Amino acid sequence: MIRSQPMALRFLTAGESHGPALTVIVEGLPSGIPVAAGSIDRELRRRMAGYGRGGRMAIEADAAEILGGVRHGKTLGAPVALLIRNRDHVNWTDVMSAGPPGEARGPDRRVTRPRPGHADLAGALKHGTHDARDILERASARETAARVAAGALAKALLAGMGIEVTSRTVAVGTAHAPDDEAEAIDALLALPEDAPMRTLDPAAVAAMVAAVDAARAAGDSVGGSFEVLARGAPPGLGSHVHWDRRLDGRLGGALLSIPAVKAVAIGDGVETAAGAGSAAHDPIGYDASRRVFVRPSNRAGGIEGGMTNGETVRARCYLKPLSTLPRALPSVDLVTKEPFQAATERTDTIPIVAAGVVGEAMTALILADEALLKFGGDDLRDVVESLKAYRERLRAF
Image (cartoon, rainbow, N blue to C red; front, side, top):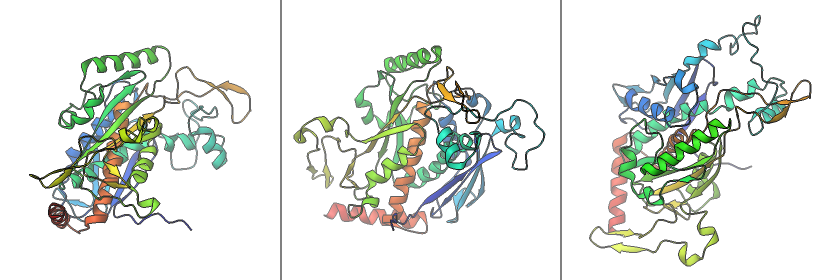
């Protein structure tokens, strides 16, 4: 029997895209973490932003209601429960009712023509339903709003440990941002919530926006890539001793769970595969004044042997073009088996900025779990003191 490693921090989401609300419970957070609803809402607003989003973002105004686990602005050490209401549910109350089906009102919103590239057909076959709405409502990336809310709590824990997480847009179609932006973490953290793309180069922003416009005009979608950056993680998070405890494996799995992410590279994992070993690794030096080991480069993406090495954790994610297209691809009706054009749901041209924010949340949740596994503590002060003692041990090494 295969068992995954025990988790110090875990979360569970529930809710459908057009249901009343999304909910999330986060368990394992120590007490004493500062939590403000405004800080969670800021992350939710960031997820709604970015050029290339669709009409759903004009309807929603995501905000989290804290239902438990927080008192007077701090976690209690109990599970934290959050709720995010779906404003669009008012238009779907009959379709998404939890009760038995009533008399049909309004348009028929059954989905019997599965979209190529989506969960529709595989899910309908798995669950024996001819209405793929049973599948797509939960498979929708709308669920990631709950993950972002959970990630905001993980970020608050990490902030108390001196760890910061951000993201940047690397590419949209063939438009690319400069690679050296991965080192400009302070500037990326300072980007406004309404930035059209999370890149610092104006020319790259303009080229990315043009790529979105061209795809939208063609009734198509476009893919891209983003990078998640975590600065300040101490060496030794993760482990080399078991396959399911290796940090790069855990992080890669978490990021691949984001809808439409089809590949993940840690550091320069793609580029170094075609080169020589002498150019693939990061030489090791020692800074005597700070009493720390240093690297002149970070090709490893901050992870070696399944563990953080003290450099910035860097993971690049590749987002496929979304499968819901205004100009639909050929499909087959689930009921009649006749050929038709696939169903068309409301969609984005590319949610690249939002995907980066979700990537931040998943990275923060994995790093927070690893930090708690290593440093323990029922209260944030215990965690910080344990980390401080560990850093002192590293300095004396």
